[in-house]
Image (tube, rainbow, N blue to C red; front, side, top):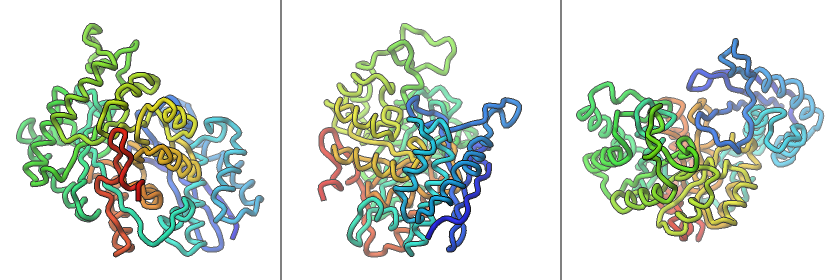
Length: 444
């Protein structure tokens, strides 16, 4: 069945900034998708088209992207008579219409909105839940499907927080849970315990939440944050069952070939900036001391040598985000340089469902772990919950268990687990790569 109508509009994301929503109509009904937006964006990711008119929405309007859907994409897709189940062909047509290497013509936000809405329509046409339909597109066979281990971002620093902390995210991963439902129990209990630990040390206002639902206490640095997490995990009764993940987002504090851990201070002392090697040693010391299993963007997105040196000598998962930007070309370079062993998969970094599947499979072909991710500016759309189950990669990060635009994804996963029943398998730590060892899920 083909598309009868496509309509895009401007709505708002969780930060109050405009974003794109797309409705795709078929004879089966209306299928809707909304697009997320990042704050710390990689220099190499697909272009999110904003209007740039400072007098309207502070330059962040998306009327151009909306117009591109309504006036360029819609007529061509309707005219093409492609069936909604032809996801790959539809995504290829979108790329052809754009014609640029980074989706700068129509905007990745315009293209992605259409791509997701088409997938929703395709699932309905096939009579399948979205996760099963996307699984089919990704070549999944058999009845069993894998529920991911969530990585809850519970302490915020970096660009997402007003404290002095350079590292952007400190996450807890309930690897020792027996099901996704239990992982949520462990994660939420630890989150509430952490809240009490922070309030006792820093006062009530230290537990206001950031864009992704995490706390941003006025800590002195990474060590203090790791101590807080360890204390909360222990007090909640989950020592050994909950591990720690970091998203350093170090491109944010890379200056003149060095790393400035005091980058939020306008008068930071350049003599205290450190080299990639020194930063790598800092991570190694933390890994020895704390149950850290994953580090994302430990180095700048173009500091390839530091990535390669560190990944060769580590025993944890090293995730590329700004480094790889879900882009097959960047992923291939990272594979050649042995720069990392994990991919952060953000659908809006690449811009279509088909390319997202391709990126995950390319990373897995080299034995990488894959973590499906939200953005800091989110909507109530839950496609990433379906996608992570479809791909069977076993890892998702979509914020703290707070704020509805984050919890919507976790709730969607609870429903999927319930629906799958005996066919649901919880990934635990089997989705994580560890140094040169690929994820156990890949070996099945």
